[in-house]
Amino acid sequence: MRRYGKHTDEDDIRSRPNRKGNRPRTHIRPKHEDAAEGMVLTVDRGRLTCLVGDRVVMAMKARELGRKAAVVGDRVAIVGDLSGKKDTLARIVRIEERTSVLRRTADDDDPYERVVVANADQLAIVTALADPEPRPRLIDRCLVAAFDGGLDPLLVLTKSDLAPADKLLELYGDLDIPYVVTSREELESGEAADRVREQLDGRITAFVGHSGVGKTTLVNALVPEERRRTTGHVNAVTGRGRHTTTSALALPLAAADGWVIDTPGVRSFGLAHVDPSRVIHAFPDLEPGTEGCPRACSHDEPDCALDAWVEEGHADPARLYSLRRLLSTREPTEGD
Image (cartoon, rainbow, N blue to C red; front, side, top):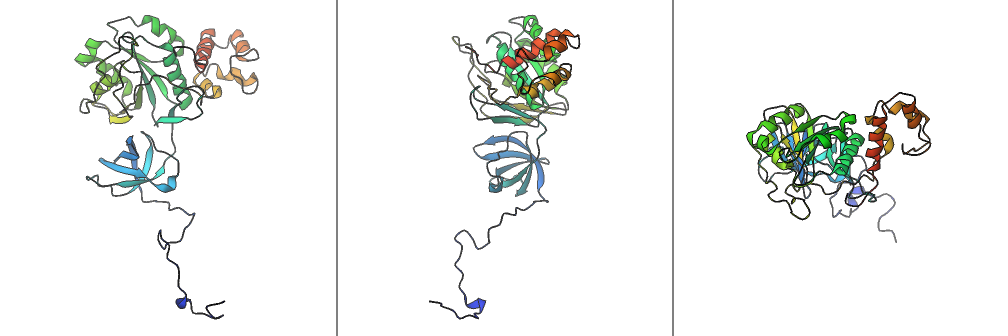
């Protein structure tokens, strides 16, 4: 039964109110062209601390971004209250394109890939020469992640007063990776921080390393105004320290132009996401030799064209060995 005649006045028709608001739904999203630019400093339970100009602003991710998550180092567009006052909350409406990503998985057969840091220029791999003992396979995994993500690696070796660095550095000599060797005495005097700072000036550097190697202690020396609780104990049985950094944090570098990003101590570094074809980009002397490789070549199989390329004298055999050693780290071994 029709309630209204054929020619009804629209004013006479009742509209059912939308419980979520009367504004009609649309798939057209606002462009937010007036949004301010910011950098994500840290993420904690859905709240993102961002630097907008010279103000630190608390923000949350807009629903329109869906599952796309912002991480430390991301450049973002922010709207809302940007005063930075207590109890104010802005909204991140856009995540800008990333120039680099440091990614890892929980282990090598885990399909879930996690972005740890975005837009860093450099990855500082901090390793103690003793107490705890160095883990070359973990260093190799970090190097692969750096090469895969577009970051330049830097080796920072600590506690040289307990053990010499020569043997460990020999493993990486053919990779031409810059390095800094420090002692506990130099760390206490500030000399270690000064030498490390020279490698960081003008760059965004992410620091990674397993617990107990002195990573956060070094970050504290580089950024003295932001003291973070350091590892106070190394387990005598496992040789591993307790985790003291629980979330990644970006900090402005003191007495220089740059940023340091302290990340939680790692016990493993899964590489399930790594494609060998991306790692080879870090070996420009070997990359031309891959043109004759079979499709999806692992660069460590009988038909790999790199063997002939090296035999013909185009590259040093030690470089090919280094590449294959790094790629082999994707295969887990006991104690890795």
